[in-house]
Image (cartoon, rainbow, N blue to C red; front, side, top):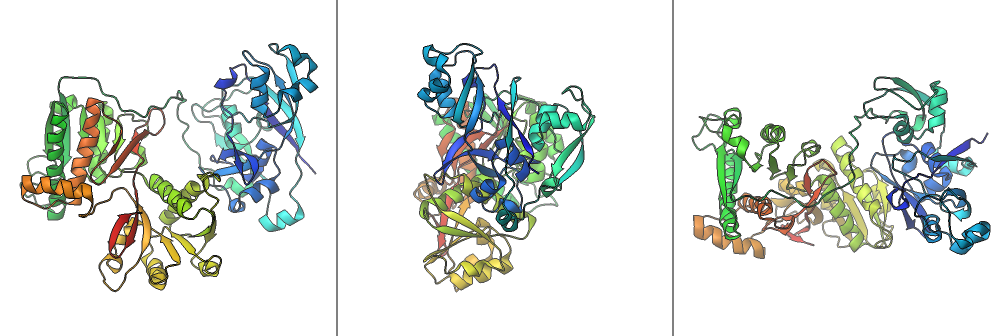
Length: 579
């Protein structure tokens, strides 16, 4: 029995340009809605929301029959239909025609009175329209239209193993949640939620238990998440500091200058290299006109630790704090900076949570998602019309990295590249060896027992291209054995090579100053210090360093800034070079 679709055509009293609609793009010659999967989304909910048969969605998005992943992008084929539109303030015949992708002549044909212009609250019938799915939560005027959606054909049910059996879950309403947000999150119409819970209005209260019908195919994947406060949609991508005559900057490093019992010469040596690079950056900053006092704190000292250092009154006057290089210590300093509204910069990769809700946080190392995005674009650039094979990992970390890559790969517009991807396993990937003249394997796994044999097998085959991880370089079998001349491409936060022109130039200055050879850490110290402190003199947030590229982007309103720029490198002949 066919279920009627309660299709929401949202007609708000807001200005047309202020409404938020689902993005529409073209894919494989068809116009599609672009839907980003949220927690609780399932195939049944998508077909109901967009009035598109599940069979069409599956054919457009191979692989989603195995389930949807939060953050994944799904393309929903547009189904043109007749819609009803109520004219709002400042709308014109032209703007309405553009909104629904129909001609003005067509609107006039079915609504003769519009020939002389539109009137406020006028009702229009618009055939063959692309219905706009509104995504914001501001609309109060909702028009319900009934639409029959055909069940998937028997062929599709066999091919995709589709099941639309209902299940009921109990959900405790969280602060900031409403019946409307719950309907959007779980893809269940508000009237259905009201009827199931015997609600006479749409009001719900925090702590109230609501019964929600959810399709079995996704019940086990719906975590209860905290709903953030609603924020104004205004993201800034420029760091700004108040102009002052002089600034105070703190640098935390595990120098261990007085050799405590926990002394580690490798950690201490790396910290010292970082400091020497940072000190050279201070010279460059002074030439840019920056007047600043730098405080260096050795939190591995025998006389002081993080607790005693952070208790110093002078720390409250800092404009910028460079967090420690180690994760645990960095989190402690970050909490102090957040509490006291001080800008904190992380020279190396940090947890995403450190940026959430803290607009004063800066992560100078690109995240795994950023690196996978650049790796995906590299694949598309080099193999625009080919099919690549992703050999999926088996550990939880590998699975997460695979998913980030898949999302990035699928986000590249078809106008840029028509490359396709096949998801394989370690058991069946070899069946795709003869699919093309060239073989492109994407392997984002740290499983040495599986990766090394594959690299060994194809190391002499120039028609095989492998995309992997920078972590492979830490294996002695890859970079420490002359007999294994492996080759692969990977994404990295930085590019350090003594043959790089920028490193060679810096090396001369470094040796002249310290009579020592430059290292990756000394270059990082220079780059990070120069990048962040340049913001004090209103320099660009997009810069090139000695071994780093920087493009700081705010991660949503109220959150911190993330460097989104890295490098894609080819490893060949025991050396990495930009592709």
